[in-house]
Length: 184
Image (cartoon, rainbow, N blue to C red; front, side, top):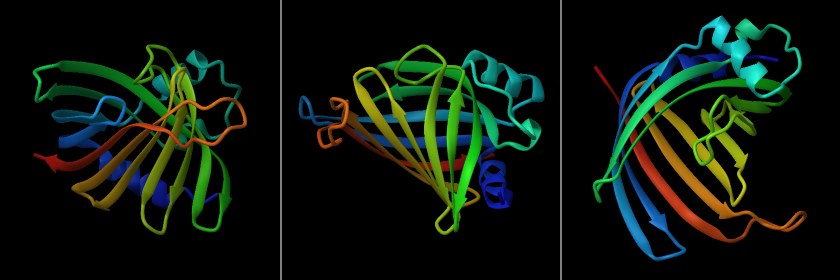
């Protein structure tokens, strides 16, 4: 597997980001805007192993070459709500088909639910887009980060009401859009 491009993607993500987002809550027809200060740091070898252990994930070859990060953020909504969180994430590529890598995305803490979680990811080298799909208890979150250049990312968040087993994801609960700019 060729990890050079996804490694470049994550190297560009390291640093401080200023993020402006708009969320459209389709369940109750509300629009919310928010500002987030977001800090991304490289993940240490010890934290890589902790993320695997927290998720009960088996042994992984070349763990220190796998993409990952640790992040902290603080968000303030236009309604005055504040949220802060820290987490560590590790990406375990399992397959490559042409310019697309896919695999597991592990976090020691999920966004929607306070627990370790294993999600799926794909990364397209053609447009430098990381797509992460996380099945939570009530929703399935499909989160896209597209690296436009080393200091600009575009974010898209689609939260679907979690369908019954075997059913299609076709009912959106939330749609979010963001412009993420590196600062400093």
